[in-house]
Length: 114
Length: 111
Image (cartoon, rainbow over all chains, first blue to last red; front, side, top):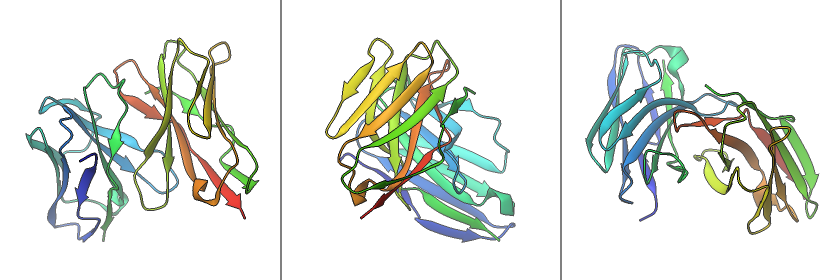
């Protein structure tokens, strides 16, 4: 298995809802990442998990809450989002946190906040 | 974060022609770069990488050139095909061992 799987593929949520995005990989990668991508823009780093511990939070608002239950799973919990949070949320993984292995990306979750 | 930029936001080429996509980076200490391809509705896909101890690396139909003197990176695609139509990002490994993505170039292949 050489893929990063993200669910759901599409999500529409209201500003008062609570939802979660899920990411899974079975490549034995020890670093996992959440990126946010707005239309026609490059991916922007949100969070980095290294060996299941949060190592980087790029000043992301607390309405986004990441979780890494084990080395294969990464969640992003969403609460009280704003319409401007609508974007493609990408999960990625790499063999090691050092980054020089390159990332494997999932296909993303297209999030719309109404 | 680092500053990684692209010279051309869009590029149109005829099928069969060669494509060249350019990228400028700002951190002279960066030692690892990746080109990604992102098709509509998909995540970025690794194409080719290069380390700073090299100035050229070739893959299947793709070549990456690195000019450290002027901090410039390019991706050459030979015999461009309709399936090459996508947005191409260069990414630079920053000081914190994280990748920073450039603005992106949208490549359209005209049949």
